[in-house]
Length: 397
Image 1 (tube, rainbow, N blue to C red):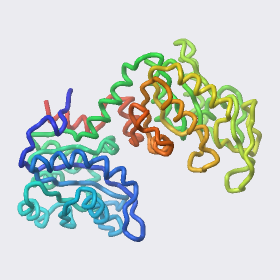
Image 2: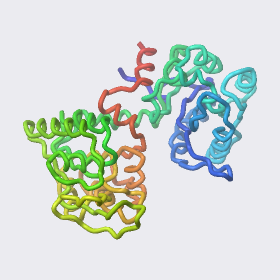
Image 3: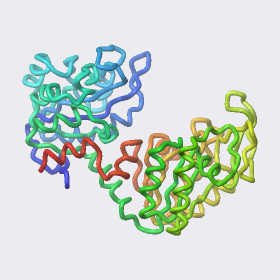
């Protein structure tokens, strides 16, 4: 079912409840970090302000566990928003109650109110109908602009939709689902680069992509899992035996479908772990010595991956190929990012770490779609929906 965006409905001079993801760190001096989360909602907020709407922003931050914990206040986020938008942000210091109602009535058209951290109320975490009703009573239209957390069931994401006659998604949210939707019917050849931590969700992602993928390029802990499954030594890497069973199934299925599984042919390793400050060295036979740790894919593997990407028409990448937060072990991920940017393929990069890599090499303008959405994006690819999207669709019916 097609969910309209905020630009497709009449919001002129209406009260607009915008659920955002503003879960950002704040340093000791009160300055908000990860400002990309704030920047991501600005087009939607600015559009609403142009329509002379009253904008009510709602979000959570940190894990206060349903209690008021001042260090998780959204006040610093409000200051960042005020600077970005060039206007005053009304901040009633709660998300429900008389003070919130009063501000919603008194605030002029074309202004913004930021509610205090939703997670200060335990009922938000419980998807509680009564709390959702209290949130909804101050607005006319509901807008979900929080794709990154729409895989969670919360009062402000699910239950709340039942109290609005008009619901929609924000401009960023719309962009997310439109681009992720392209992966369901990609132009072929289709290459998927999978790295990062080895989790059941990533293996489920690979299984889903088998419906349309031509090649898997594997690195990071995921690459280690498949090397172990193929009988290679993986040093200090801890491999879950249940993961090996699932990896064997994926390898078998890929063989019958003609899908290429490309694992590293060389690896950058260190003796012990990173705490030992040991020099790195390259292992070229894929057998990682006992007591050593894999930290990146090697130069020959980078070349193989880049060659495969150059011949693809669609490339999807999720998860770094090395310990990218360490400057010396960033090269494998950098090589893949540059290969995608330089190819003629439409590229889709998802996940905080992988998106940051593309940003760090200034390649965002040369990659079709870059999203910092992590698990939400993966779950959307697997299931074709998310709990918050289902809630919107049920309200539209």
